[in-house]
Image (cartoon, rainbow, N blue to C red; front, side):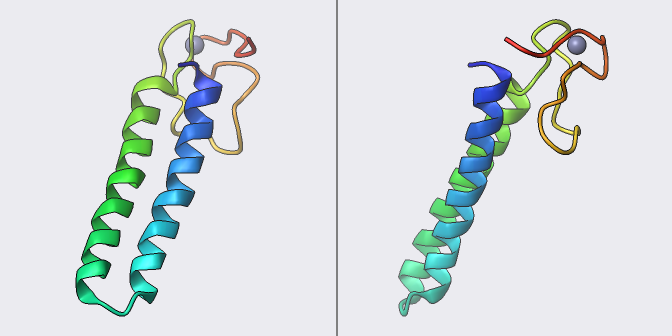
Length: 84
Ligand SMILES: [Zn+2]
C-alpha cells in the first residue's frame, strides 16, 4: 500500500460509505435503515483508519491526513519528493 493508493481508497470508502447510508435513509423499513447505517459507517471508518495508517510520507512516515487539496509534491515535514 502506498500513499496514493491509500488516498484513493479513502475517497472511494467515503463516497461508498455515504451512498450506503443514503440508501438506508430512503429505504422503507427501519431494519434496513439500521443495516445500511451500520454498513455505511463501517465502510466509512475503515477508509478513514486505513488512511491514518497508510497515507503517510514514505520517507519520514509523517501523516499526510491534514494536507488539503490532493497529495502534495513534497512532504510538508521532511521536504522530500512524494512521487513514486
Ligand atoms: Zn516526509
